[in-house]
Image 1: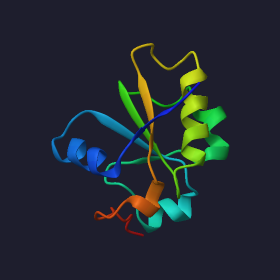
Image 2: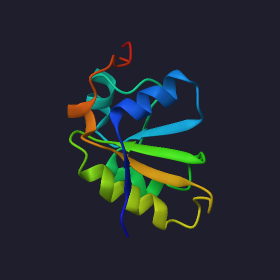
Image 3: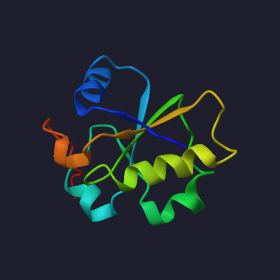
Image 4: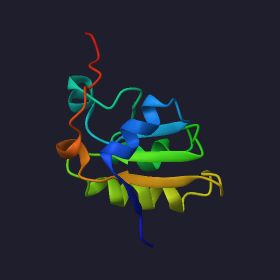
Length: 109
């Protein structure tokens, strides 16, 4: 199964236009807290199998990771779960955070 990718430019455009896109960041909580795509939800990769039923999946889901490799695996994992709606599209953020050149949201301690 191939996973579609979305460019950081396209994701930024969708977020700026307030399109209903859900960003799932699979990095560790400390990495997430240090800066993430605005509005992203942190579900670390190793927790994904146990938390997939806890997430309210949107119609469009974008998975983000450091370089865009593990997000492809995570997108496949998400797509394979029965709890994810048939109309849901799951994409990987191409190039991951290395390719994200826009402002990051930082969690305040």
